[in-house]
Image 1 (tube, rainbow over the protein chains, first blue to last red):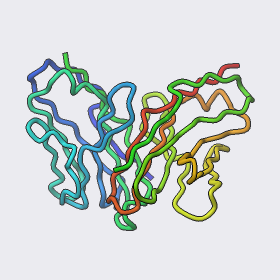
Image 2: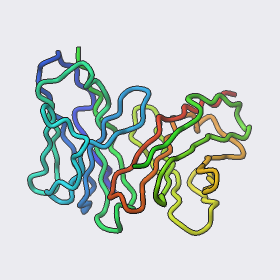
Image 3: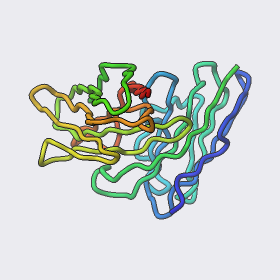
Length: 116
Length: 114
């Protein structure tokens, strides 16, 4: 079974530039998560989708971050404009729907973003 | 809200020695608890989880953890570590009625040397 795919794996940009990350979840997984993992910290949930609807985006900095999952499968996370403090690994995870979020979350390898 | 404190940022240990990675949580409601492992340049992988029932939970790769409600702890243990266990370990908590979000600790770096 293919895992969660993410691209690109690495990205270096200048501050104030834009960047986009792509995630393809495991086939059949209705729930998709984006996490931000700053060096030396644990992952922090940015946004969660159930199919193509947003379940939780309370920790997404909406002035610069946006995410979509238009067809309920792939998802993109965008930062515009980027700040130095956005340097982090962006992890995508997916899980089956239901059971109050207790289904195992499967994580992709992440995209390491460096903002100069 | 729930939070997790991982008491050790780094744990060095010799191969075949036992190890314990400590995790304490804070919550005003009942919780579910998880341990994840992250190998270099890879995503997180679930090691084990406590949902209910027996407080001793066994996971993959010979790891186990014990839920202690009175001490609000969920320490991870392995009786004999291998070089391949070198990785970052994250404890995570989810409130039973708080939706889907996992709250992660800052992680403990386990370094196993010969």
